Length: 258
Image (cartoon, rainbow, N blue to C red; front, side, top):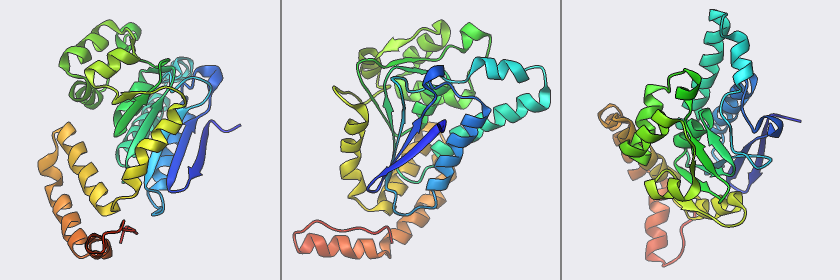
């Protein structure tokens, strides 16, 4: 049984962490496999959105503490382990299409960081969110702290970081950590959320995602040139011509990403 499962629903890819015995906590190999799954999807133009979820009633309980402890006193092994984690975070953030985290059960530590790297977070009533490094004597990454504060607000970020306590789905909704608490299957809700996005022009979505991510990370000036290049590409694209024609003909456009 694979630790990371991938399936496809039309133009939506579903990536599922499948380590239920560990509450979907990840070891180095699983971090690597998860990151590789996101990297592989960058080269598939047919994919318009990605849903990240977990099997067995858990999203992700973060890093597998025992696996990290086994390499803690071996500097090269510890660095390789950490590199796999950071590469996974970067791969999620670098997705060219919207990423929706569909959260059930624990979403803790590295799992919460994964969810923060998504564009949207949907939760069911069982979802619990937390960042407990202070309970383990560890330090939460600075860029992840920035994302947490930008998403949930500085007061909630401090509460979560200082206490290490979990917050429930209503509290996560109230502070903006999740955009919706859903009834029923959270993956199906994520598919519904993705539906209008995947009908729109991919170049437009890509530029908007790049700008939003950069603003959250305080890097808007760094990506201004890339956004301008995407805008120029969109101006000359077949999708722009299709969108204009569809508007004139009062029909829904069919975008191809070109």
